[in-house]
Image (tube, rainbow, N blue to C red; front, side, top):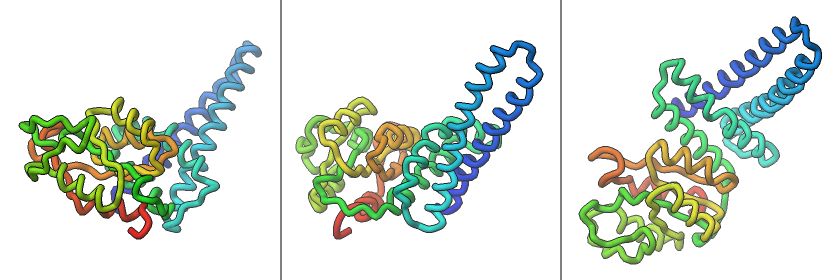
Length: 250
């Protein structure tokens, strides 16, 4: 996990340097423009862009400090969000140019996010936590629809849904199964959890973490023995460990 965190943090730093260098280069070229009005307007725009990336740079520095100290710094959490929101797509581009696969970058992003959430040392009550699961964990031959009502599960143990329901009962957490981002957002709006443990693939987890905005999300990657989106699985012990990191008495 330590290596994975370094990948994303390194790409964040590289992205900031690239952005600042680009702004600086354009600024330098503007000095030779003849039209004063155009030069002033572009200078203002570049100045604003520069300020945004300076804030993002502070966020990257904050992430590094938090990882080193293994402790969250509440006053800097806004900057970390700015850094991730602004630089996330840039890191994907930077990683592609560096020959790093998108899957590895997303895994690293999730690892950094999980580390930062755990460093906040949240002590939430079970009902304040949602366990958000993808529908592909359910056996594809199962006739029972559980996306709108998890209690429809017959607990036949043909898939991991049963074990995850029992885990939710153990911690008194809310368990939901979503077919995609739209339904996941609907569950978030209805339940308004203060913490989420989400199971999904790299792509869906990274998008979900960003969609959740200020709600802390710990992501647990699913296993895909039959390929993506069908009969996937998850290590239940990893989900429980994630719950324990944000729940009281965990």
